[in-house]
Amino acid sequence: MTRFLWRVHPVRALFEAWLLGAIIVFGYSRLVGHVAPAAFNNGVLLLCGACGIWTVLRARLPKRGWLFQVIWELAVGFVLSLVMAVGLDWPARLTGLEVEWNKSSWGPRGITFLLLLTGPGYVATRIGVRLWLFWDRMRRRRMLWALTHAHLLVVVLAMVLAAVGMLLASPYVRSTTPLIVEAGDPMVQFADWLLLFAFPLGGLWALMTLFALAVVLPPSALFSFLVARRTTRRLEKLAAAATALRSGNYDARVTVAGEDEVAQLQSDFNAMADTLQSSLRDLQSERDTVKHLLQARRELIANVSHELRTPVTTVRATLDSALERWNENPPPTLRHDLQVMEGEVIRLQGLIDDLFTLSRAEAGGLTLECCPTDAGPIVQRMVEAVAPLAWRAGRVEVVADAPPGLPLAQADVERLEQVLSNLLRNGVRHTSPGGIVATAVSADTKHVSIVVRDTGEGIAPEVLPHIWERFYRGENHRSSDGGAGLGLAIVKELTEAMGGTVAVESTPGQGSCFTIRLRRSD
Ligand code: ADP
Image (cartoon, protein in one colour):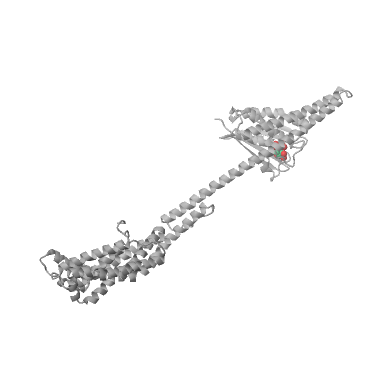
């Protein structure tokens, strides 16, 4: 079909139209004397229609600017009129049909006028074709027009059927039927039926349909447009939200209205946008964490170099003074210097060990040997190790409540000792003379808990969230005996590496309570 439509050059289309006209004229001339004379009147209209429609369908649609197109179409219409009125004159004369035409009720002028009308008819129909093609393009591109089109198709169909009904009921059918003569030749009979009945009826039907459409189509189009717009508006909003989302506006959402498929689409879109937004938020927070970690690493290096400088300087100064006084001072002074040096070296070693543990934990390289462990004896042992020193140094009592027969915990003995040692030392360090640091072990259905409670100075609420950070030292930190701010960071890392948790509760002026919860091994 597409190979036939609007494919040939207008000159060829006009030639084809003339050829078709000549064939029809020749056919009519054979019917002279066989069909009713009135049939020839209708025959002229059929001839104009056939040649005009042929040209409309065959002639190529010009593609250049609109002015060129208008001039081009008018020119083709003009030449078509000439082809019909002048070009067909020759075959009509040759076949003798002209005589018959001249005798008809329209007369020679009327016939020529009708033939000349083919050109304007062509131009009007081509305008219709353009409008149709334009509409067709629109409905393909926009859903609103596609839906309006679908509604209008129903109206057009209704009008076509209504026109058929009206036509069949009209008196024309009854007045024309008797004109069809009973002829012996079936071809003549067919031509008579075609020219007197089928064609005029078809033409009338087309005119009535056009008229009905001209009246009904505009209001129906408006109505269909308004109905279709209700649906397409929601889709347009959805499309706009999707575009906004794609261009980075992750807050874009649509209002869910109704319960149909579009509403489903709207709520699915919103859910998708929510997921996307939360995933992005997670990614951003991951990025912040990485940034934070990198910053922490930089600070770690700065702090390490700073912390290592003090003990190294002390060791060096003590060594220098020891060497200077080597000859003048008696050995007891040397002994004191060596003790200072030993103390600083122990501090240095502790610091380096802590740093090593933390950096391994950070890199995920901590080696743990977790096995079912009885936490009670470990707590007891650690308390016994710390208690004498705590009493001697600060009159702080360290006690343990570790009943035997408690369930075993999943823990690495060495790491658990390190955790307890840090907590106990902190407790002693921050408790005034006369205070108590008490440890207790207990168990529930899933966990074994170790509590280290002291009656010390406590921790301010605003400080509490920071105590687990590396190198964080609170205001109550004493430079004389305080650590580098790594103790609790190590407690947290090691406990979590063993699959446990650590929590703290503290009231300033009353004391602190650290709770380690380890998984039960059974
Ligand atoms: P440090 O080696 O400086 O003690 P930690 O990481 O062990 O570092 O502790 C960090 C900070 O938390 C300390 O400087 C101190 O302010 C506070 N802190 C820790 N344990 C206690 C406690 N039992 N009582 C009061 N404050 C504490």
